[in-house]
Image (cartoon, rainbow, N blue to C red; front, top):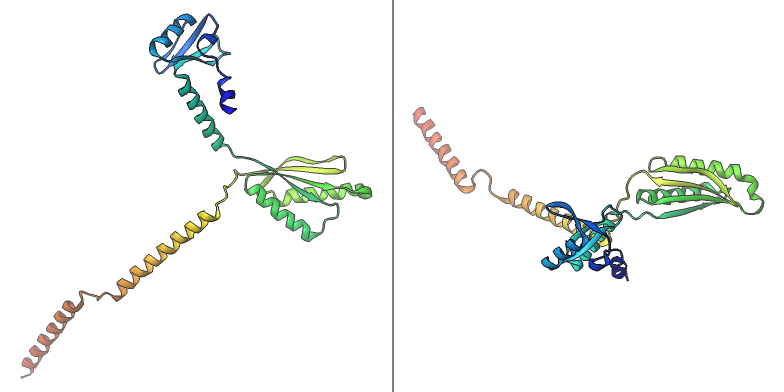
Length: 235
């Protein structure tokens, strides 16, 4: 279905029924009659593809249509991969939310914003609790103030029916979550590096210092020579 939709976006060959078109390519662009452009496409064994129908004259390319569709599909995938998917997370309060519940929801809202999501927080007024709407507004303003390091207010508290809403957007781009598998791999690599470091230090500690036996033998010989010389001097 997606491929059919993509195909229907472009007119090709005899579907292009304007008097002239602009052909674009690596060497630049040129305006030619559409009939001549079709002849050029047939000579090169490719298609005449209209890529910008609203231009005056319409812009076309001489390219194999299947190859063109593949390039367009690939470009769309790349653009989609670069886009950060933003979700709107809801946080619900009552007009008389206790401190423990407030801190719990504040923590979750902070996590949502740090991940790049928006937050829609609201106070739900049940029955006669609508009389405490000022109290709900104060709560939402406090909520926004406590999140000012990670979120910015998109709209101030507003009453819609029995709910008072406030909207927050993340200040920074979302941080991609690391999967458990990736975390395990990083931990294993760090452990392997630490073991290698410890083995290296162990080898360096056990290795003979200052040249080993040969150095010790030389020191002993020098000491014996000096001792002999001192004895001769005393005689």
